[in-house]
Amino acid sequence: MFHSLVKKVLIKNNGVYIYDATLREGSQKIGISFSVEDKIRIIERLINDLHVPMIEVGWPGSNPKDIMLYNKIKTMDINSNGTKIFSFGSTRHKDIKAEDDKNLKSLLTVGTKHATIFGKSWDLHVKVALETSLKENLNMIEDTIIFLKKNGIEVVYDAEHFFDGFKNNEQYALQTISCALNAGASWIVLCDTNGGLLPTELGLIFDKVKDFLGTDAHLGIHAHNDSGVANAIALEAFHHGAKMIQGTINGFGERCGNTDLTTILPILKLKMGIDCISSEDLENITEVSHFIYEMANLSGNSNQPFVGKNAFSHKGGVHISAMRKNLKTYEQINPELVGNSRNIKISELAGKSSILHMSKKFGMHLTEENPKVAEILEVIKQKEKEGYVYEGAEGSLEIIMRSMDMNIQDPDYYRKKFFELEGFRVLTEMYKTNLISEATIKVKVKGQEYHTAADGNGPVNALDNALKKALVHFYPSIKEINLSDFKVRIINKAGSASKVRVLVETNDNGKLWGTVGTHENIIVASWNALVDSYIFKLLKRETTW
Image 1 (cartoon, rainbow, N blue to C red):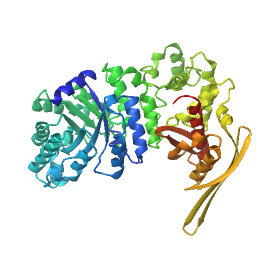
Image 2: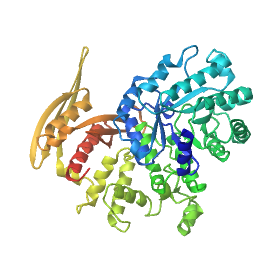
Image 3: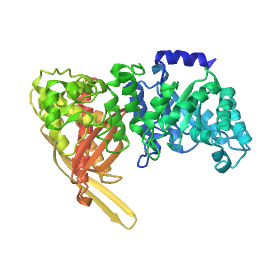
Image 4: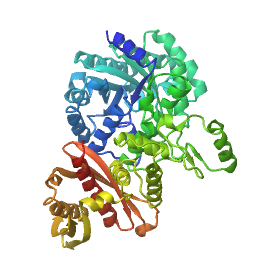
C-alpha cells in the first residue's frame, strides 16, 4: 500500500510534508511569465538548496511550454534527491470516459509517476461551472483517480472550494472527498480556493473531516491569501492534523497569492520545532526567495517576513541603542538562521554575514577578521546605490568578490585582465519591413587590439555576436556560451529617460549563470551584463566548475 510509504516519509519530515506549487500556482500571479529555462533553474534551486520533497511543475494539458518543461525534466537527475515531481490536472470532463479524456492522457504522456488532480467540492460549482449533476461529479472524481492509479500514478486529490462547499452543503462536500479517498487518492487536500476562510472557522471543519474520513486519511491544506490569512490558515490546519502544506515561494499566486513557504518553513522549524527542513537548507531560503523574484522579473517585497531586505533592518535610535547591547531586544531570531543579514545603519557588521556566506559558496573561504570582507561589502553597497542587485546575478557578484580578493584591491581586476573595451557602435535600421541591427566593436586583449563587426536579431544580439567574434580568437572556449535569457527592469521610473537594470542569463552546455548591468542607456546596461557573462566564463575556465 502507498500509505505505508507516506508514513515513512512523514516520520522523516517529523509530521509535515511540504508541497511547492510555485511553478503552476505561483505562475498564475499577474505579471509573471516564467520561461522553460526559468522553471528549470527554479526546480534546481528548490531541490538542491531547500530539498523540497514535492514539487508541482504544471498542467501539461494547458499549454505547449509545459510540455517542453516535462521533456527537459526527463533528462534531470531528480529521483536521487528524493524529490517527487507532480504533474497537475483536473477530473475528467463530464460525459467522457477517463481513458478518452485528452487532459488525463496528457498526464500519462509526460511520464511523471505523481499527479495532483483537482475536483469540485462545492455544489454551486458543480451546477453552474460544470453544468452537470452532483452524481456525475462524483463519477468524474472516482473515474479519474481509478484511471490514473491503474496507470501507475500516485494521486494527490485537491478538493477545490472545499470550505465554501462545506458551508453550503456539508454532506455533499464530505461525500466528494470520501469518493476520492475510496478511489485510491493517497492524499486529500482541502482547498480554500477563494481565500475567504478565517482561521477561527477552520478547526471545526477540519475536525469534522477527520471524523468522517477516519484516522488513516492523510490530509493536506491549500490556502489562498484573499483575506490576508493564508499562512495562518496553513498553520491552523497543521495544528488540527494536516500532514501536507501546499504553498509557493514568496506566496506567489493568483489574485492575492497563496501560503508563503518562505514564512511557513522558518515558523515550523524555528518556532514550532518541526524538523521539516535542515538547518543548512533553511539558511538558503532568503537567497532562493530573492532568486525567484529575479526569475519572475519582479521587485522583491522588502518587508516580507524572514527573507525581506527589511526583515532585520534597524533604523530608529532607541532600537539601535538596545540592539548594540543585546540583539534579542528587537529581533525574533538570528537572521543568519534564514540566510538573511542584519542591517544596522551605524554598524560595520551590517551585511558581513551575507558576504561570508557567499564567499563560502564560491569556495573563497574568507574569514570575518579579513579586512577584504569589509572592502567587498563597501563595493557591493555602492553598486546597489547605483541600481545593481545580485539576486539572480551571482556571476557578477563572484567576479567582484574574486577581484577584491586579489592582492590588487580592484573590483574590475578580471575585466581588465581578460579584455578591455576600446569602443563600440550599434546601429538599428528599419527600411520598409526589414529591420537590421549591426554592432561594431574594438577590444584590447593582452595588448592587442581587435576590431570587428557583426549583425544580429536586435541590437543586443548584434553586440553579443560582435563581442564573441572578437574574443573567440583569443579565448576559443567562448564559442561554447549562449545568452539564454534577458530581462529589463526600470529602476527610477523617470519615463523613457529611466535608469534600467538588465539581467542576463548565460548557458554553457547546461551550466547557467546570471549577470547584471545598469545604466540610463539600455544598450550600455546590456553591455555591462554581457561583459560579466563572458568574464565569468573565462574566470571559471581558470578554476573548476
